Image 1 (cartoon, one colour):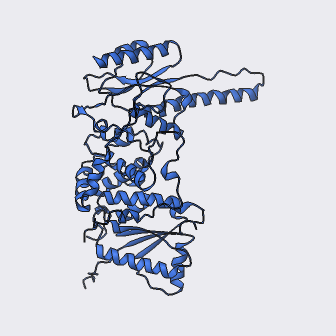
Image 2 (cartoon, chains in turn purple, yellow):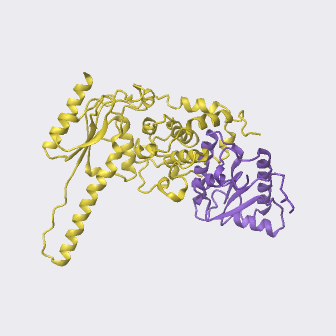
Image 3 (tube, one colour):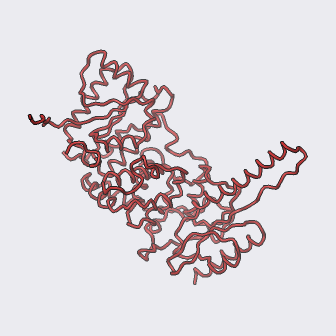
Length: 150
Length: 329
């Protein structure tokens, strides 16, 4: 029997939380325009950026994500008027806390990206993935029980 | 000596209010086997008060949280009577209304407890009408395990009573506290040093949930950490992630509402400096938004329930201190 081929090169896993009204549509546009961005990015659609419970971010890290990015409408353009303003405050405090606990700063990010900014969306993702690839595997917030590989 | 005098004063006050029928329950501190072994308790009779009530430097426990359960009981009893009256009226319009039970609770609050008390009032977790709050003086409380002044008292934030019905002794002033010094010291470390510091502290956690149970800001009736599906309901596996997550989320859930009463650190059987997590949030809110002290008044909106159009972007966290380089490259 032949040995299973192991993928030697490590690839980061990125979770992108995208708001339904702007960034998700922006990702769609990027796809329609055949813009390239890495397949490491797994997009999760959320109704609004303020739907993002900080627990979701920690959970993503637990289940093996190496970076988490939140994309929402530009401040002031929220479909629900003020959701992203609240999300902005929350994420600022949460990121500061993660940094305080010694977790690498670059693993989390918030970007505002509208439905018309497909090019920008692809750009953000390319940049984020390259930053995370540089950073390496997420060791500080991983859960060994959730590791699938040996 | 001083303690005996003030204890006697409080007992006298409580007895006076009990006998006049103004209050029916007294929440105070009960003597234990040893000096330092003082527990919060409910008193209903003058004899019990005389025998077991105590107020001294070991009475660090914040009594405001006990009001959540007690006032809820009173309100439930009132609601039941109201409902029964309504149903009786439907059956027989001429029926007499039964009187609603009137129970009032006497609670003794130290200056820092009044902040928690006000915060609970602000969040509608306790009912002001059911409570007679008496402000009492405090010269700093002792740590029962170390037999010295509690950390929170060495950096006392205020000797001022925020909310009270009457005051025994004198009211002090809000103090210029040095409570953020330790947080600053941690912030100045490199991320790797911080990481190993926090791993050293948090890995001692035995997940007894005492910090959650004692916290006057943690008053949810259902808690994520009781939910077996959360994967973090108890200490099942010694995995660093669980501790990280528990403590980040615990501090997060009280962010913007924490009055820095320091109870979490006091009750921690493993002596984890949990107040440093809470203070980090308070310090960030003060620096990035505007200075806010939870529980200092009833009007100001909590920082996480409001926003400004020109708030800082989340990346301010990363650019605040440019000299610092993060990551384990």
